[in-house]
Length: 151
Length: 388
Image (tube, rainbow over all chains, first blue to last red):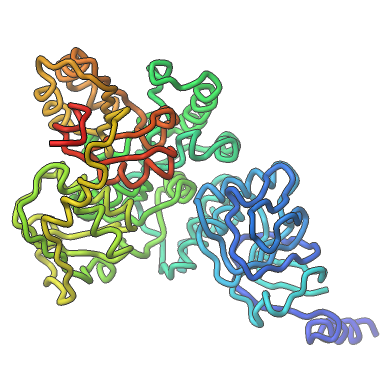
C-alpha cells in the first residue's frame, strides 16, 4: 500500500499542496534550511555585515539591525567590494553565516563567497523568490539541484 | 558547460576538497557568463594580497587552503615592502599579518613576487594568443591590449582556482567575438609621459567597460601604454583597448563610427585640478616602474637633493636588475620600495596630499587611502611641486 500512497503524497507536496517548490539554477552545492530573511535591496558583505555577529550594520539598509545568521537570505544580488567573498567565509568560520542564499541574479562576489564558504546557493528561481518567499517562512535551499522549497 | 571526464572527476571531489572547490568556482562562473568549456592557461596572477585590502577575512581563507598550483603563478602587490616596511612607517601588527598572507600563498606553490607588472619580470608568463587568469586590472589591460594575450578581469579566488586547476572558463575576452572595438577615441594633440595617464583617466570614465580604439598623433612606448591602460581600468573597467597602428590586434578591426574626441585642454584640466597644492609625498610607480622608468628617474635626480618625501615603487626583480639606478635615486634622498605601492599600502594614509605621475593612483588614492591626490609629470613629481 505504501508503494502507492507515498509517491502520491510526495507528488502532492511537490504540487504545492503542502510544499511550494521554486526551480532555479544551482550555484553553490549543498543544502541549507532556515527561516527566510527577504530584502529587495542588494547586499555588500564588506562593511555591511558584522562578521562576528552576522548582524547587518549598513546604515539605511532595510535589514539594518537584523541577523543573517542561520537564515536563508533572499536578496537580488551582491554589490560592492570583492573582499565581500572573504567576509562570507569569515561569517561561516564564526558560525554566523546564512544557512542558504537565494539571489535573483547571481554576480561573482556572492557566488565566490558562497562556494568558498560551502553555503548552499541558488539563483534565477521560477517563480521569483523575492516576491514568493516571505520573511519568516521556513525554507530549504538545495544548491546541488537548484531547488528551493517553502516548507 | 562541457566538462571532460577528468574535470568531472575533480568536480565530484575525487582529488580532494580544495580542487573540488576550485572546480566549483570555475564552473559556476563559467555558467553565469555562458562559457562552453574550460581552457588551459599559461599563467595566473593573483590579487588579494595586501592585508589592508583583504584583512582577517582573506587571511583566514588563504591559510585554510591546501594544494599546489600547476601553472606559474605570481602575486599582486602586498601592503608593504617585505624587507623595508619599518622604513615606510608600517606597524608591527600589520607586518606580522602581511607576512602570514605571503607565507600562506607560498605554501600553495605561488611565487612570492608581488607586482602589478608581471610582464616586466618574466616575459614567459604571457605571449600573443596565450590564455591567462590574471586579476590586477592594469596587468589584465596590458596583457590583452599590448601583448595580445587573453584574460578576463579575475577576482582573487577565481584566479587562484584557475592556478590550482591550470584552466579557466572560456568566456569574455578569451573569445574572438568579444575583442572587437566598439568606440573610437580620437586624440587631437601630441602626447608624452604622464599625458597617457591623464588620457586614460578621462576615457575610462566615459567608456566604462567598453573596448575603445584609439587614433593617436603620437606613437606611444610600451611604458606609456601601461599608464594609459592602468588609468582606464581604474576610472572605468576597460580590460582591452586597441591603438591604430600600434597594438597587435588593431589591424584586425576597423575603427568604429561612434567617436569621442579628446583635446589638449581636457588633459590640462586633469593636471591642473589642484595646481599649486601643498605636497606631502610624491609617489611614483603605479603600475610598478620598468627598468627604463627607473633609469629616467635616476637621470632626473642626478645631483639633486629632494625637498619632499619621494617614493618610487617597482618590483623586486626590476630593482635588483638596476642597482646603479637605485643607488643614484636614493643618493638624492628619494626612496625605492618594492613588493607594494601607494594604493595598497597603509603607509600612504598618514600623508595629507600625494602627488603622482599615475592616472590610476590619482583615481584610487582618495578612496583607498583617504588623502588627496594630484597628477603631474615625472619631473614635477620628483621636484615635489605641482606647478610649472
